[in-house]
Length: 277
Length: 122
Image (cartoon, rainbow over all chains, first blue to last red; front, side):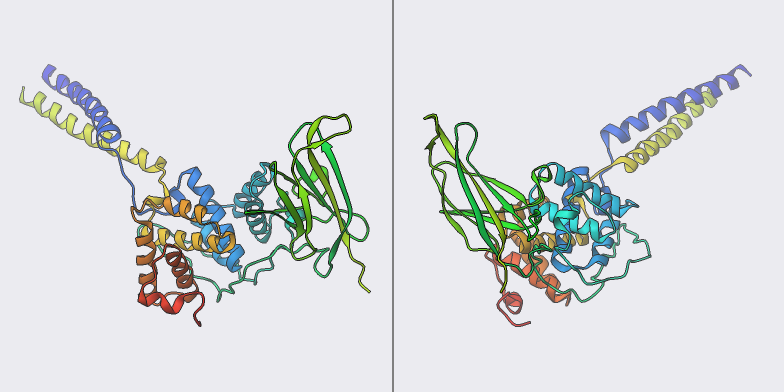
């Protein structure tokens, strides 16, 4: 009887010891390696990259059904929230305008209302594709989403609603020598009523380079405002892409302010529509 | 005595199996992977998205960095192989053009790719 009790006791102890040993083996000595999996297993950093690429792919092909199918592979239920949160985060953190535009455009297309929607609304009018209702199963034999329609390849352009048929002209130019801070070119784009026009692409050029930015990305400065920080000792030109003639000769060479202090120039350029005859 | 030995062996064996099973199961629930561990078809789709992004941004450094996440030792070779596979399999011509464009940017254009170069018809 005693031996039987001891056997049960030892069995229990052996189970515990074996369990601990097995767990240690599985966790430390021979950990699981997973390959050939779906995007739902991606790390957070790679998910961010994946979602951004889905957004840019949508900007490129305008295939909403395919974008949705790709996002569903991440295994998250609320796609609107998934993209909107990223779009808002990109907007608030001052990310690259192209990234904000891609994420915002997709978030809006999915039915969301991202913060930057006012800036980028209307930047893309993709062809309609129905929302897939079937959930996509993804494991070792994946079925990738095929394009839901014959894709129309086009490169979207930022099209401000106020500026589609309007040409802009420079109506104000001010230069101030600022003793402190970096050189700056401020651009203000107004509509006929004098209100700011968001999402207007602005191109700054200098010898050997150029940079494109948009109005409206600093809402606290007004929806038609944009600025560009200059590098000393260059000469810049500024234009509203496809909408205005370039404003040339904006120098970032050192200047002297009213008090005799050395500073850097800050330009303010105001654009307004040309009245059509 | 024999009963005791058997109990210990059985206990250890069962315990080890169960412990390892639980360990692997827990890992399977939490394990996260990087782009390079994706199934090849997902890697291919990712590559197409990189190509679409490249068409928009024309930022080659960015495209290379995004392709670098696939962990391929020879990204150019990978893109070329993928493009040729898509051509062989008669995949969507728009996707083939995107891949060919990437391959061409790497400086590799093979004969099957010729019809899909941007300045070609179709």
